[in-house]
Length: 363
Image: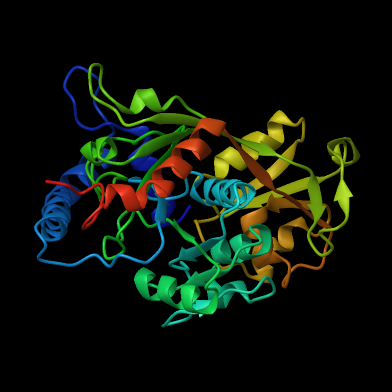
């Protein structure tokens, strides 16, 4: 288990320290005490940055089309990319022409660039490549999200709405709709980085336009009596196994039962994938890797005498380095249709509402 995985285990198993709730292990107490001053500093920097945009000291760039941001306040995966795919499909079904921008975590590109379905994941990032393959929308990446969006719109003038995957904290890009996603891990110990998993304080959830609970009731994120934004539920449903090297070829669960199975996952919450396999009745030897892990052939060698199972996000990176039998299990987001109607109402009303500055950050 690497340092990052150890830290995540600490974040999501403990709510330290509260009297009367049991004493934590000495190692956790030491780690908590060492990291707490850094967490205070991080909280101060987050507050200063937000105030700079609230007060107009720093400018958020408004695009000529509506912007829908999907993100979360917790580090790691919570289902943002499946939700972005869901929204892209729903917007297209409603007659819109969405484009998608992403940071491209792990990308080697310094500027902005388009992502093609057959790009190298090491160059463009695993999530943008998955979006490019599955969304049927133009996808551009760049650390500078406004620049990536401008380039996308210049190349695809037919696009009339931008979806920003994992952009909740990227304030330079003004937005018309903010959607925060949380999964069954909730907010962990409820503390800010690095002593906890939060990128922003819990109060930030009350300021977004909608909160989506992935496999959990989003009401649990709020205290009794708190005013909440609209809340929606999402479930990630496995579709069917697709062959890693030939995704047009499928495989049933029954065909895999009784075989020697291995599973790898380098996503924000790998246990979610392993639990899905168990729920399907598959017994696997599982290995978890850090989110956005850059796989090597050696990482997968242990599965050579059997069948390798992995996620769609990991599959885009494993295809070029693994020649054994391997199957990918994609998931599809099932979300209340009320969310699609809510987003469409918001972006259709942009002109009438005006939305000056940075929506969601009013003082």
